[in-house]
Image (tube, rainbow, N blue to C red):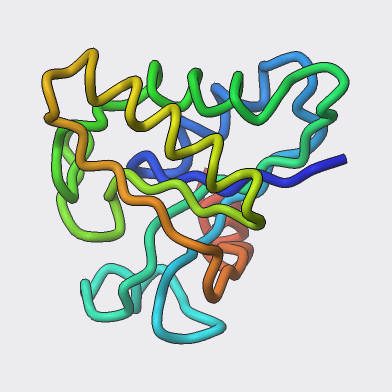
Length: 147
């Protein structure tokens, strides 16, 4: 099994979409790229933590490749809007690929370049090494309790 961590706006929609792909074993919502190892939704919403809302994917590379996951990532969100997706605005809603190793970085660079050519250089998706990933379990539990 391998891991992919992707930011494409509010994490709920992408989590559902990714969970339906063949080869995705597990999904988890969380935050990544911020200043601290732990954060909360309330802190992230202040726009001061530098965390992005992300979906962490556990996948079977024998069924779905990292490249296929990234191609799907670009299909399900707008990679040309800076710090926003749909009605959501703020740095936590940015488009960003967090890589775990040099192989993922190389693949992501190629996919971003391909998308950028297709979209006339308008892609704003960032590429960063995984930093301070934490789950959004606290927020997720509160969300489920309200339903």
